[in-house]
Image (cartoon, rainbow, N blue to C red; front, top):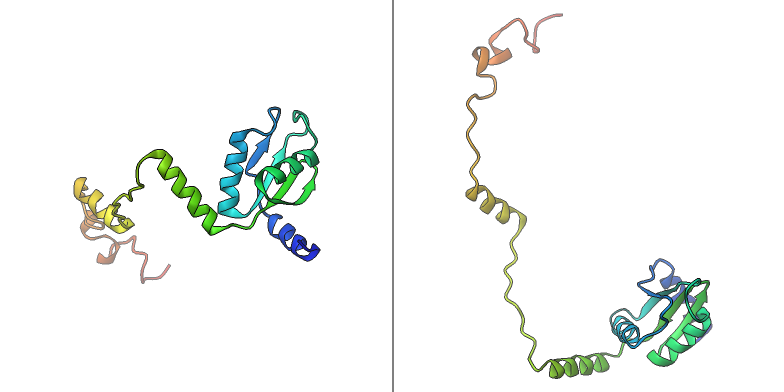
Length: 158
């Protein structure tokens, strides 16, 4: 990887938040599996190392993660590691098929009917009708200010 590519990836990683944390237990198989899945989905990740409790230094963690995941380390700054791995669509499809075989069932799509806000509001209103008001606006005092009463706000002088 060239330095220009690295710089470009560092710029892309700048606004990202770390989505994984490594603490006193270090790197486990579950963490590697989750990082692997996340790299398939995102390609670029940030990992936070808790410096006070971690058993190794961040650079050592970075080297171990790079080796285990087949990813490249873009940068290590303080307790933050930035990892990159190009997503391979064929590899992702094979992993998905293996998981389905392991589960023993085919993945079924659920039939979901998406309702819009207006449709949901109409159904809600039908189920809970609003009580009709006893008085209409302005009916009190013979129609309000438009009947030429003294409190009229329209017309007239002050």
